Image 1 (cartoon, helix red, strand yellow):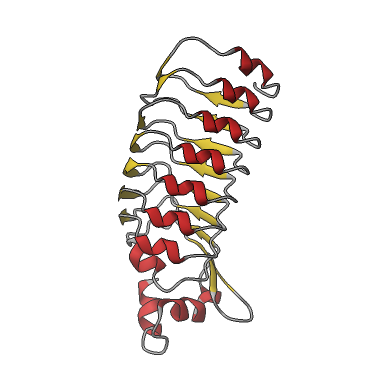
Image 2 (tube, rainbow, N blue to C red):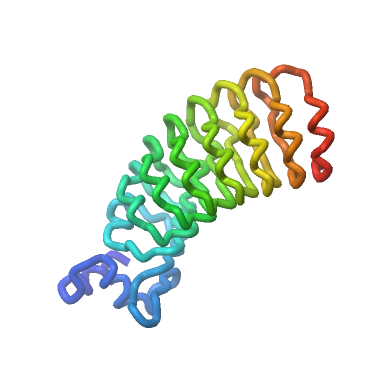
Amino acid sequence: MELIFALQRRRYPTLESQISAIGTLLEGVSCNNITGHVQELDFSGWMLGENLNSLFSGLTHLTTIDLSINSIQGEIPALIGKLHNLTSLNLHSNNLSGSIPIEIGKLLKLKDMKLSHNFLSGNIPKEFGCLKDLQFLSLSYKFFTGNIPKEFGCLKDLQVLSLSYNFLTGPLPKELGSLEQLQFLALGMNNITGEIPAELGMLKRLEILGLDFNFLNSTIPESLGNCSSLV
């Protein structure tokens, strides 16, 4: 792929124009038929060694990114916040490190985010609460610390929330009980303390609840009996 871009670089000076010009030759690239803007990148399993700065720069019309199962290193760049049309972001199973930039909260159209199986760390940004359309969020198998943001309670369309296998601490926020569409909640293998909030009993659609291997109070609230869909 590097050779193809090299041949196009003089004629097409920007990354988007290069990809668009050869989009029909590259499996995994989809462009708008009218504007030529690159809208979808699906390079899952290509074992790319790039960093995200070089891959995202100039591709501001992207709606779908799947770069999972590669060897991408470095941090998630703040410029990701400029991808205002993005609805799906899949970066799982890479070598990403550092923290998630707060600019992630600018992706207001995002519905699906998978960042599991990386080396990301730090606190989970409260700016996730701005992503009102988010339906699927996987941040498992990382090194996140700190509390679970109460702002997750603003994600009224969220159906899947996976935060297992991290180093999260503090209590479970009662605001999670506001996620009326939630079907899957995985919080196991953390350092969460305190009681299980009674508000979780409001999750009528919840089918899977994973709280194992934490430091929670052993008392199970009776309100969980109201979760009629719980397996």
